Amino acid sequence: MLGLELAPVLASSGDSVNLLTFVALIVALGVGSQVLGARFRVPSVVFLITAGIVVGPSVLGIITLDTFGGAGPLSTIVGLAVAIIVFEGAFHLKIEKLKEAPAATLRLVTVGAAIAFVGTGVAVHFLLGSSWRISFLIGALLVATGPTVITPILAVVPVRDRVAAALETEGIVNDVTAAIMAVVIFETLRLDAPTVVDYVRLFAERLGTGILVGLTVAALLYYLIQYVDLSPDNAPQNARLMTLTGAIVAFAAANQIFTEAGVAAVATAGLVLGNADLPYEEQIEDFKGDVTLLVLSFVFIALAALLDFQQLFALGWQGIAVVLVVALVLRPLLVFASTTGDRLTFGERMFVSLVGPRGIIPASVATLFALELANPDAAIYNESAANVLVGTVFLVILVTVVFEGGLARQIAEYLDVIPMRVLVVGGGKVGRALAERLEDRGENVVLIENDEVVVEKARELGFTVHNGDGTDTEVLRSAGAENARIVVAATGDDDVNLLVAQLADSKFDVEKVLARANNPDNVEAFEDLGVSTISSTMATAWALDNQIERPALANWMTHIGDNGDVQEVEVTSEHLEGRTVREIGPELPEGVLLALVERDGKTEVPEADFTLQYGDSLTLLGRRDGVREAMEFCNPDESA
Image (cartoon, rainbow, N blue to C red; front, side, top):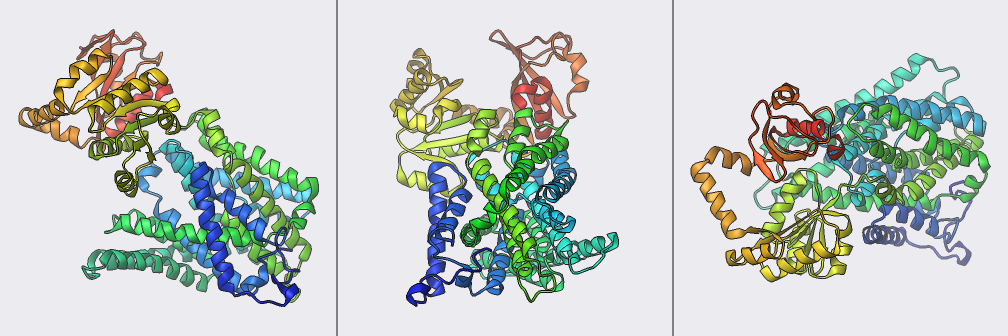
């Protein structure tokens, strides 16, 4: 199993290949998979697993377990990789983002995890005939989705923040609990008759140790980075290296105390540091992201390369039945049980149900467990159990990654859960400033720019940039104009802006088209052609006038997105139709005002007795979270 029976590559000719060659091959395949994933907008894990299978014993036989020097070195490599991957995922998990779907997130990692654990264990026991402990060992491993598969999916499927928050949090938390629970069950295989007390003790030891070690390492790193002079010349570099080292130290120290406590340690340290407002945080994130991509590529390809397809075929139809139960029965059941009554729409719940591929934690831990179970010298030797364990886990991973990961974007588009795009033609200072404000409000913004220098700068700042000429219909189409809600022509050339606006209006069904007029003399000509136009000169004059006459309001508007917000929403709720402002005022969230009402092209400040009608456009002003809640109150469909 897992290629254990195969000889090293090139053994037939008696040649020995340096391990460095294999490492270089895996890294090259990993980078290639990342590039292909970005090029074809498919999660990179699909290409990573495919590459691993091709170079593994089932196809070319280039890489086997002996390539890594046996189970011991592989275990160390996988352990360090898991530490970096889990730390990276937890570091990106911001508390503010968790607030987007707090109830759903909590239930997914508790009620949902319990349904997945019990349901998978029962399915494996009755369909594959495994013992209860082996069945629930598989069930524990298959609880985990993990950031290794969710993050690449979200990179190509830009769903709303609340959906991303739920998926990312579920992946991070379940990675930790699944790994610890699996180790606890595996450890009880050494006991003749484990009791509930044994399970609780083993779990508490690992989780408690991991949290304690993680908090300690996080506190030490925070103190060193925040208060110790790391030398002015290379402080960012030192901060990056110290953070990476801290993750590895936390993992190793916790694992030294209890097996698999390291996963909880790095998750804890990453979550604390990621929300601690560290100096050089952006540089740390970029550095860790690059390291994680390499590590992820290496581990996914290495583990997939060890897969023996005979173990998958041996499971027969029962194995396929387990996959179908896990993916199409248990996953939707746990998602809908966890998100009912929450802010997620039906389509978003279906998307989360159909996109839950399993990742590196079940693959790596199952591999290590299987190696020990297949060892004749081990006290818990059980080759049959090892075959079922690794075969079932890898079959679920393969099917869910290929179908759920590979088709994630198509699923999202079919369910209509991707927010409509905003295309901003012009990636200069104006375009980037606008994109930053729109993205802060949850819009899916794509910049279009044909200047290579500007493209590179915008991408370095984290913007999604399509390289091309915005006056080309095909460039607009490839950037997503057919799915765009708004197109903004924001270049420094009025002729270009006019052409872009006319193309967007005539060739694509865009809800709103705006153009920037650099020369105020062109505004009238633009508007005569039916193009909504903003004069750069007049906009600057208005801003200066506001600072003179209305400084408090001007400052507040300038920093919209930090705490406050102003939004317009159409009234579609039957609950509001025919009611007065006086009646609905107490029902609006605290700190939110209904400032304006637009009806039939006329805008006014409503009096208390003003009666709302279906289709009215309301301007809501107030706290950011409150405004979002009020939008959902007024228009459940749009806010969803």
